[in-house]
Image 1 (cartoon, one colour):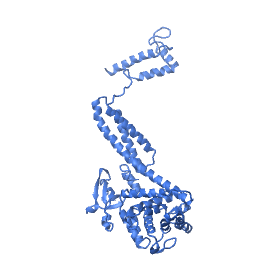
Image 2: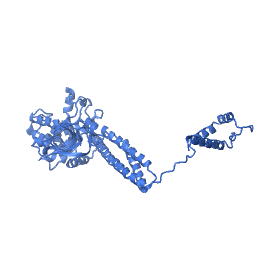
Image 3: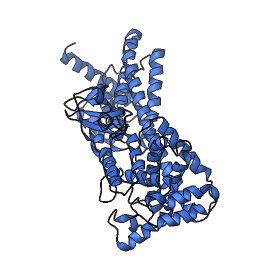
Image 4: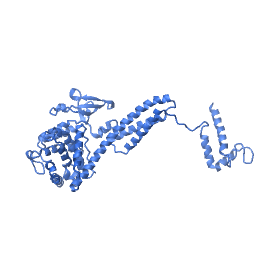
Amino acid sequence: MTEAQTLLHRISAFRERLASNAAGSALVPMGQATDGNAFKAADAARQLAAQPEVLSRVVRSFAETPDARPATPTPLTARARRLLEDARGLVARQRALADASLPDGAANFHRATVAMTDAALKMAQALPASAEAQLRLCAGLEAVLDAVRDRLTTLQAVVEVRSANAARVEGLARRLVDLTAFRLVDLDWFTDLADRLLDEARQGTPIRFVTDDTDAPVSHRVARHALNVAAVVSRVVAHDFEWASRPLTPVVAALLMDVGLVHAPADTFAHGDHLSAADRRVYEAHSAAGARLLASLGLDFKETAEAVAAHHERPDGTGYPAGLTEENTPTLAKLLNVCDAYAGRRTERPGRPAQDPRTALMEVLAAAELGWHDRESAELLTALGVYPVGTVVELADGRAAVVAANHPHRANFRAASRPVLAVLTDFDGRVTPRPEFLDLAASDRGSIARTLPRAEVAARLGSHYPESAD
């Protein structure tokens, strides 16, 4: 049929529909006027203008093709129906994650996952009627949905870690406040939390230092730092001959050591390391105040109270509050002191960015040589590694990698600074399909140029490895 024939066919169909649409109304059949004379276009126009609802119906009918029929759904095979149900379930999971608080890198990862799911749904909607063709396309659709499912599992893990950290901060802050108000507190909660931190350390879980929040209440800021210190203690205490057999006490002490700061003025924290004389006096009083509070809890906390009282003392006698020398300082206080110093350097503070792990370790060890920290306790930090597991680094050739394992040679600095890496990008910065493992200690080629800061990790790897960018 030519274009002219098609147009004539549509016009003929339009005239027929126009006649049927006007039936029972004031309009007369096409070809006849109101006075019985021959049809006049002007008469039909006046009638249509007088009844706009009829005009609208007629125009809509003209816009349709003469062969238009309601679309019938494509019959789906059982496999295709199952895949569509899977896709709906994945969309529901994505909606739940959309309401969660995600870091920048994970948010980019989530957007890419949503795009993959959208493409899969469009593919499913375009499935052909042929069962054989459907089965062929279902194989590709299954691969896409499996990839989406894996990505959602990764995102869910990131959300769960962030939620767990937030719950820990909230729970610890609330209980520290209750302790200072002499309200009833379940002290087993601290032991349970310490046990979980030790279990994470035994499993080799990387330390995720909780970022300080200058807008948070003082109690929450104290809790954040306490959790960071406790995470460090839980990973080095196994190497301390005195405390390795009873590690819960040092971790609980780390959670409680700054309880005396809970009600300190916010200005005490506002200036970071640059405190006024008045703020410094308030700050330095927290050790003794916390020790008195813990001592009131009974004999079970006597050892912890003594350590809390002295965790800012120095071997050279220049610490506070009592100016104790190395011989008079409890060993637990020495351990808390070095872990506190390391965690403080690894956390971003007002006016001071977080230090990379290598710099933080070197500074604590150097300070120990100057008499600010106990040397033996400071050396325990080398168990973390120069580049702890989970640290994202850049190699000298520009590739990005994450530390997968460290060599247990604490006395051999070269081995400690050449860990096993999972290389994630190529020389041009493109993320590789799968990580390549590289043991720097077993190779004379390759070296770590620097540790990547969190913001750069999110930008370079967040869309593929959101767990590394958190």
